[in-house]
Image (cartoon, rainbow, N blue to C red; front, top):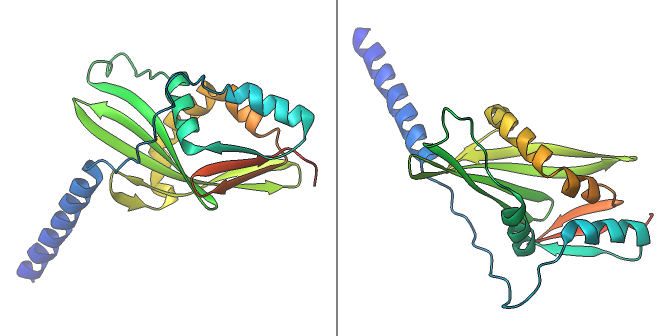
Length: 188
């Protein structure tokens, strides 16, 4: 009986060590293409507001454009106690049909760490609902309930991107397509 207990304990500790190793490895990030030389970056917030007012046609935002906009807009802040050892690097968005993969990248004592949140957007009458459908810590895929420790970071991101989010949800339809975000301000 004692042998069986020690054997099961060893298996559980091995599984935990393996999960920690997989979660510790940062997820691969798709690098977006660089902007064309001399090209002025789009003012996405203004463009979304104008599209909502005019309501003339769909607006497509490619993930490379969005990632460049997010790198310009977001600056990381970490609590003073962790300030020198933890640094927020950037936010990366990857679109697939019906799902957006939002990856947070930060540096912990010089080591790259990632956490990915998979989001889905639905419209219920006049209200948009953003739902977390899953995610990952590094390479370790986890169900959405295990992403609860990321709630303060996501709340901080929503505060920092308040203008972008408000302009986005002025649209009547928000759709995730392959490598792009498709927005339609026209009334159905």
